[in-house]
Length: 407
Image 1 (tube, one colour):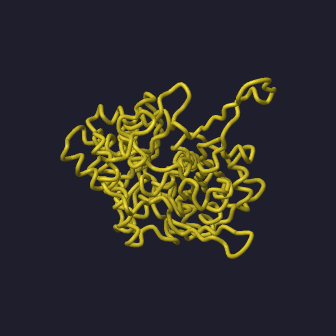
Image 2 (tube, rainbow, N blue to C red):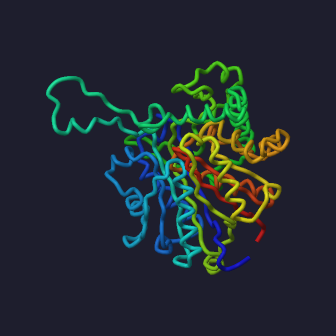
Image 3 (cartoon, rainbow, N blue to C red):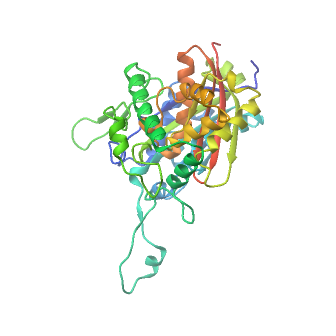
């Protein structure tokens, strides 16, 4: 244990709301402010002590409803001082894990000792967009609105569901494999929830939504999980957006939520009398050919382990974000180098409490979510080494290796 280690001292998220659900009208900036207050309040750290805040958001149309600089707005709404430094990051679904990485890098460089990595998204508030020429007038004809959520892709590129499905098949991962993983994700979440693993006070915080009349609405659990999922139901679902394998059932929803992770140098944590939740061993960013979005978490984990100087045999738990079921399946096959027995062993310790297919995927918040889910589960098991990775649009990747020990 060294004074210049970077350690996680607090990690929390809101419950994730489903598309059109309880959180649908709350701006993501407000959710970001909520989770900032909570992550600091749990360990009695003031906003004045946070030297830099990095804030992930991946749906610019939604934060655009509040104009811009969501990081600045969220930190001020959270009660942080006017001189607080913040930066908004858009690295697609990687954004909040990128936020943690940039804070980690600043601490490792010796520039600061305390940083926040935050992410927030409300996909339910994503507006429909008018074409630019409407500003200057349209003499005749209909005006078509553009929905940035429809197709799940980027202009000039395939829908991500098409790329994920095609690459999955190239790696020998079938539609049935993906449906079976999706079913397992839902069932693993239900088991974990029944065991009290997703509870307020640990990974989750309580969200109160004031009402004009009557008491506030209280949200204390994720809305998206589907306990009545069956393989038969999943097998009947049609594929989406031209994908050969991806359906609404083996993919997550268009969800809402916020996540925050507070990191410090070990020296500062000691000075404040805070017990670290985990030590960060390495963090990496990656990118590959745009269509390889299903494979990039596997490549990223390899890079993160190499940087941390650990082998796959030393890893106790893995979190791979389930942007689609294809991601953990393709990525573990890459890690196993095609060895089916080794792949099966890796899948046993991957997303052990379910993943985004059950929990939800508010894109800007998910990277920090998989990291805290990993840390809290390692702590329940008495410690160990874990690795987490997430893909982002057009095959971007973020990865992290952490160690949990009784300190």
